[in-house]
Image 1 (cartoon, rainbow, N blue to C red):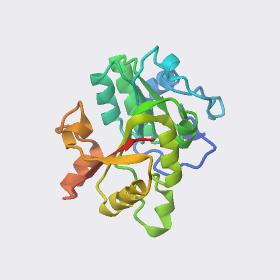
Image 2 (image 1 turned 90 degrees about the horizontal axis):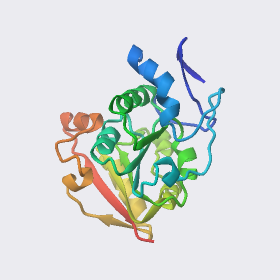
Image 3 (image 1 turned 180 degrees about the vertical axis):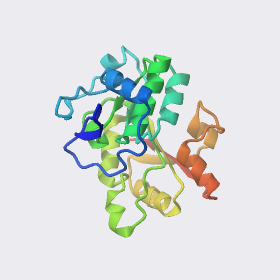
Length: 242
């Protein structure tokens, strides 16, 4: 179990997760909300040792008979996921992240707005995807995934053929994977991997459509950082066709 301080602990997972776990200390409110409400908003129950009770997910039961569902993998500080859930109360949203500060931030915002249409997995997204097979998601969002720029770390990149397979098994036919990255080389790699497949089709969309219903003015932290450093993000949409 990863300890933030003597009063706050974070559920761990036995699976290997690459990425930052925490940065600055959490505020008193964040720690309080995390401790009290994470279990309420968690997709899976977790045990005292920090392990998750992973099991096949019934989205209709989880979201009280909603019929449209979306997932964000690696939601960071939760800005995009929170605003989507706030603006689309009839859509069920799932989020996965290992960054403690981001999870705590999002839990606090969910509690303050008393949102009923968002559930989180504070652990490895592979464990989540393995239990979402066949659930018919409408969309999966992956915004500015870690590019792992060093060659020796490239194998850590999330968008591998194996992980794309897992996402498509959770996505309904006609559903889409939305990917944004500001790293040109990574965007080319993703496009190459997708174009080799016969079960997806690359779509040409405007940024407004990519971010709908939030609009072009909405930007995540990493999106703002990219533009500030004169890197123009690439917005890609891939539709499952078979």
